[in-house]
Amino acid sequence: MIKLNEDYENNVKYLTFTDGVKLLGAGTGERIRNFVRDGKIRAYQLPNVKGLRVRNDDVLNLITVSSPKDDQ
Image 1: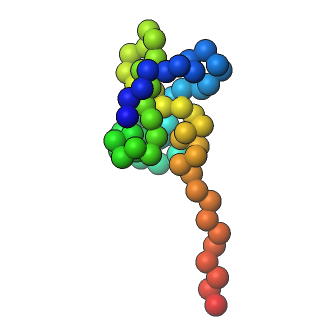
Image 2 (image 1 turned 180 degrees about the horizontal axis):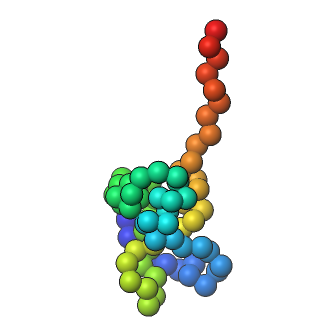
Image 3 (image 1 turned 30 degrees about the horizontal axis):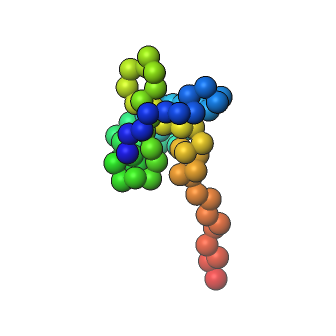
């Protein structure tokens, strides 16, 4: 979902799709586009900025921590 950003001036950090995938540690901008298309995160159109952006916190929320499986 593409949304005009109402939080632009509330010190929220926005990332390009490329920077978002770097934060995740693997993939390309297509990976972020897929998350946006699947509704897992929102994309924002910021004033006077070319291209869409994603919120830093939204990308971080995609990361899940799993505990190692017990080998017993």
